Length: 219
Image (cartoon, rainbow, N blue to C red; front, top):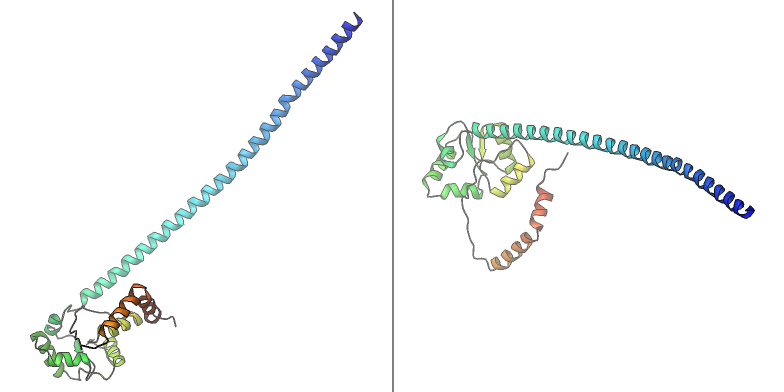
């Protein structure tokens, strides 16, 4: 019928329209896929550049570590050779050699220790100091350090002062770690001072002050 044909025409138009839209859909998918693929390529380029950057950075750090290790090894070797070249590493060996002279501050506590010591090794060292020419004794720490730098001279001094001098001049070397004497004077302030010193040490204040004042300042 007429209506039937119209209905068929409408259906055919709808069918053609559906087929038409159906033919457009794949094109839209292609556009979307192309966009997605182009983004993938863009991300791949970024990832490649990032990987190259990380690789170059790793190579640089490896080179730095190798260079640092080489320097440290050479530095340690120099220190070891210098220490081996010293003809003594103890007071006993110091007294048995003749290449180096040795002395202390005139009238200082170190000199007094050797002077009144009853230990045979220290008594021999004291006698050797008395017989040295020129004199084995100096007026102050600076003079002893200067002689140690300019001559074959061993300057005997208190450990705290010695450690400070070593931090100020890399050409100085501490040989041995022997406590010559430790005296108690029965001070009534001993217990309070001990507690305060321990408290400052536990809080890291003593170490902080040591780093501040003992660390060599750049000129």
